[in-house]
Length: 146
Image 1: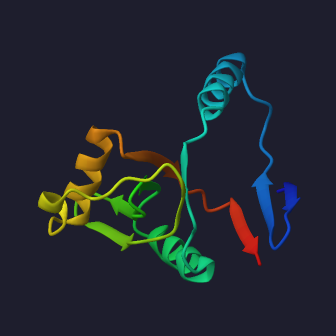
Image 2: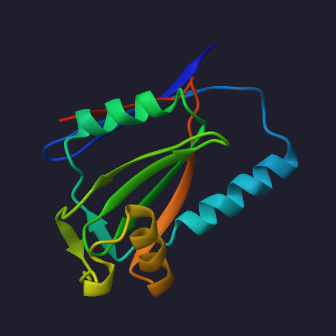
């Protein structure tokens, strides 16, 4: 199957994404894609400096074998949560106290000792975090080069 390769180079890094090319999209698929792209234009006011990308990529690669939808949430306090669930198991990883660029928020003291899932849910409810679901395709290859 053919791939379409996107490459972006920055000051200290490059991102290469290879996307499997499929059959042409139907009109309804194009409209759905356009709506998703329009929603994606709202960039968050906070960004996290990612942990070791090799460690993160290895974890996501292992999680692909458990399920095909990855829940990712980031908080203004510097927490990154990755979670994948099936009817039998929920697996996840948490990276705490990452560097926050932009708008920041402190973790309320009452939330400090709660589980990652509950802290993440509460931060989203307060507007101090964002969450997305990512569909993991076996044919989609993401690589980050430093």
